[in-house]
Length: 55
Image 1 (cartoon, rainbow, N blue to C red):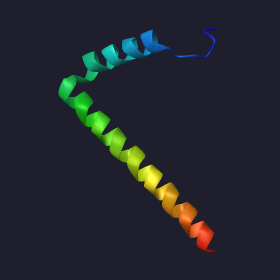
Image 2 (cartoon, rainbow, N blue to C red):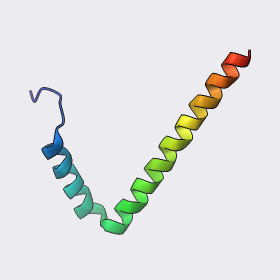
Image 3 (cartoon, rainbow, N blue to C red):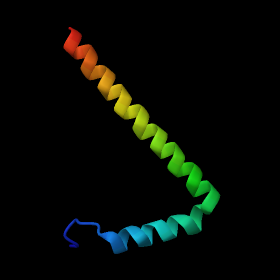
Image 4 (cartoon, rainbow, N blue to C red):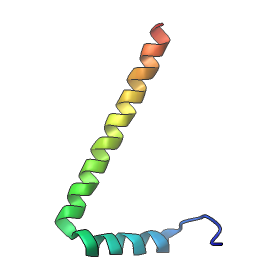
């Protein structure tokens, strides 16, 4: 229906709604937690690849 693409205007609307729902401080905490989760995931994948190479 919409082509399956999310552009900048849609992302801005989603961010504004999230800001209204969670507030600025809670949104910052959520962003920090998401960043840490992504970083941990990447390091785990890298460790898994290194472990597979050693076998």
